[in-house]
Image 1 (cartoon, helix red, strand yellow):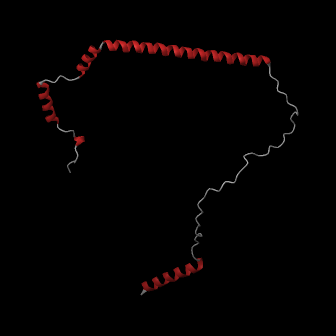
Image 2: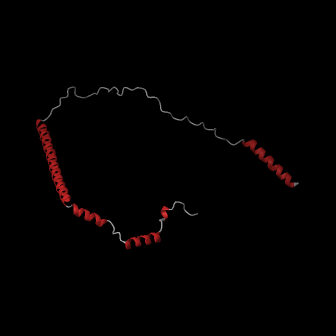
Image 3: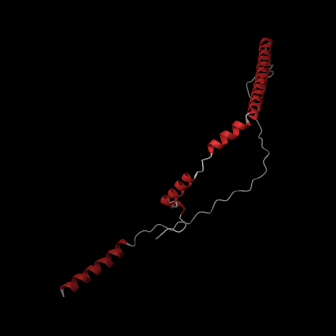
Length: 153
């Protein structure tokens, strides 16, 4: 019987405690923000008005030193001469290379019999012994495992 009294007092305290303190404060649910969408562009003029500058001299005259102009012209002429020399050097090297290739091509044409001999040296000699050896090696080694179509489970 005492247990029932203890349980009843516990329930009464819980109810009384809830009424005194009130319910737990729950933050209001957040509303999801709208998906940002690109705004339609309005036609812009692409420029803006530049305000007038204050405190500048009204009449500005550009002065160019003739010595500086002469130096720039001299530099431009020198650079053009260097470019022309490089072009001539490249053309000369190209001609020399083409001449060397033509000489090498004409030398290889005269040695066609040597070319056939070199090609034959690359092929293996097929004799009955080498054929037997190839068959034995093929049987011993078998198919490569990488080429198996249906692997065993």
